[in-house]
Amino acid sequence: MRIDIITVLPELLTGPLDHSIIKRAQQKGLVEIHIHNLRDYAFDKRHTVDDYPFSGGGGMVMMVEPIDLAISDLKSKTGYDEIIFTSPDGEMFSQKMANQLSCLKNIVILCGHYKGVDQRVRDHLITREISIGDYVLTGGELAAAVIVDAIVRLLPGAISDEESALTDSFQDDLLAPPLYTRPAEYKGWKVPDILLSGNDREIEDWKIEQSIERTRKLRPGLLDE
Ligand code: ADE
Image (cartoon, rainbow, N blue to C red):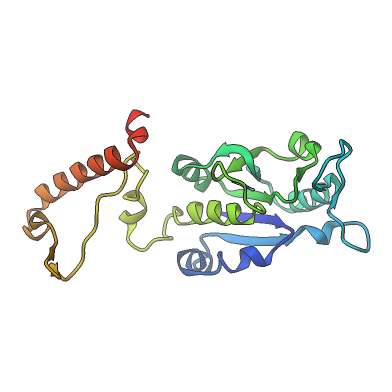
């Protein structure tokens, strides 16, 4: 898979995407992540990428031309399945969407900034808008990092224990069951007896019951879906 990210703040992305599973996935050649500075596509000396809105009012707007130049440049070298824009107005990101995106070959993520983006970017250049939640971030970079992290860990081979990504919370619309490790007792806080019983079938049943119970308690909405 190849992921190209267009941003005005590359430094916000290099750190988060250069650690642990995401770093290893790149080293193993499972994913190539390329970060591009939108300012490199600005056509004036000051590398301007935003301007005042025609409608007046506060806030700057990301200009269409540098974004078009950046996306056209990428498209001239690679075919893309989706050109994603991160925005609080977008479709809500979910595990299901992460699964779908992880099956694509090449994607671009354009990080939103300032007050918004010229509508012509949305109308003509973007294929999908994604929000990571109903709150407003300073920019789309952290949202892009979240989206990339959730996608890359799903790529076959990214996680050494084949099972782990499939048993994550949300993969079957249930929260994951609780986990314990040694010691079996700490300060009188005990690991449930069943987990020490060695009875694999009963342990599996317990995990499912616990998943349902936790979901009912913490995220009852998931059980309605
Ligand atoms: N940019 C600002 N807020 C955002 C959000 N909640 N999701 C995605 N991109 C954003």
